[in-house]
Length: 362
Image (tube, rainbow, N blue to C red):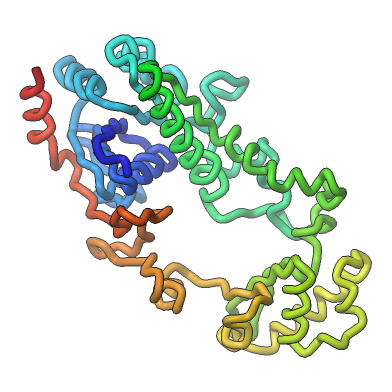
């Protein structure tokens, strides 16, 4: 979908590389500038799956010749991605003013936690810190438990990488129309707060409370995760009455007068305890088989390895091994675009080829 689009990525962590991977999955020519002589960040593999489908050039941006190469490469790009703290790219001599003066159509994508201009812009932070201050973490628990969300998904990826991708694509559309580039200030704090707007619509109807466990989606017995006899878990979220009715039918509770009162908040705690005992009596696979194919909105909690062998994945072929690494295929899918994962390069693998391309330009 993005054939002919070039993106230059300055090596970074987390949401920046993820955003660049997303663009590469869509067909963009993504060139990552890896640190010359550098190694992968501790805890990260030498060939990261976030580099899949990209090309790699190794440069030392503190060396004049390599800095010049980076500038020439950015001159050829439709978009740039960097994830340093505010001011670092300017100190390197690759700030947006310079890059846009040389390449006016450039979309300069900046990925940070706190934004380019804020009271916390120069301070460190991580996923949980950003979403804690933005409000996105508030509902991520039951009333008697501390908030906890899937690591990096709400902040780094949802509120960060995906908003950077959206900003870059929007910027490129404008650049194609007007010839004018732009700077994309993608802050995880901003994006994770923006994602809350779907929940905030419930506040307009009185179905979102500031007290955890009292809202339409975080308090009811029909919007929970339940433990099973074998240590596994199942999720239940049958919001609509017709789906809730199917849920009760499958469990043999259709004639229970208490369960008929789906929206009676005073009954939610006791009905939750009853469902806790019911689901604890059988294994996760038992419940999966019982609810499979129904509209009761019940699904097992699977690990990525387990998800790979589930019938959903057997059909969609989403989880795959590439270069010995389990990873998910590209998303979304397009009717005329291959969505299978691509191999990741070694650091600096394409340095000579990319230098030759730059030297061949008029």
